[in-house]
Length: 284
Figure 1: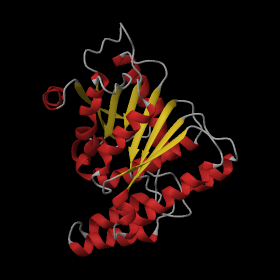
Figure 2 (figure 1 turned 90 degrees about the vertical axis):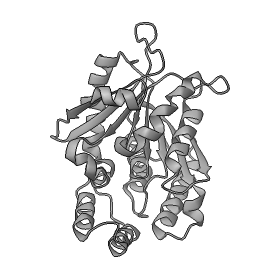
Figure 3 (figure 1 turned 45 degrees about the vertical axis):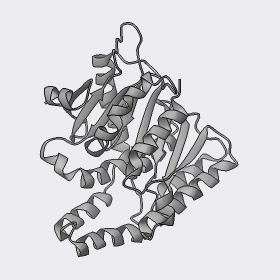
Figure 4 (figure 1 turned 180 degrees about the horizontal axis):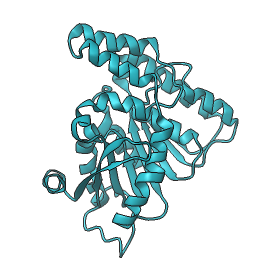
């Protein structure tokens, strides 16, 4: 498998691993061009939804050689699902990327039901999809990244001891906000693209309120999309509205928080959002 990925994505290794919680994951590791950890160690940028995101984000590691806007060296670690589970990544991400106790918004249920009506998913798939949301364990997945996976990456790829980043999109973006709100010092910067804040009673609002006026020192970059706001899909309109509300509540508190509006749809915005994160938080 590693040889195959080397042929598809330059400087990329692939392996599979099991978390301490008993879940299996596929991991793609993309190193910078001519990376030599003996000469200079690079920090890690973790990218979520690897089955979908790796093909659009890993090639952007070449930005580290861009003479017009160079990006700081980093090793990209894309995390997804392996084997037969890779076919069900859209469902399994609900378990891993959503904070525990996150409410399931009516707009989200309506969007899933629309998928059944239009034939894009079966009734069985829809029920399984929503069931994962009912037992979300974003806390366990965060522990997997920092406590299980990272020591292996650090050992096998000689990465730097600090300066690490995290990028997630949609529910991955919601997970990124959740990770930022834990006030952990593991990540130096976090990118949250179109975070899936679909319910106005989201855990991220409760956690933000509990923090008071002191925000995490970790840099946070939030993006969302013009077509989400101006389109006619209620679930994306609500997501964009709640993301704007979250940002507004940060305005008076200071902190290292930036944001940007992408001219994309929810589906097409991933790569643009990741590039915006690199340019804003990891510029040379």
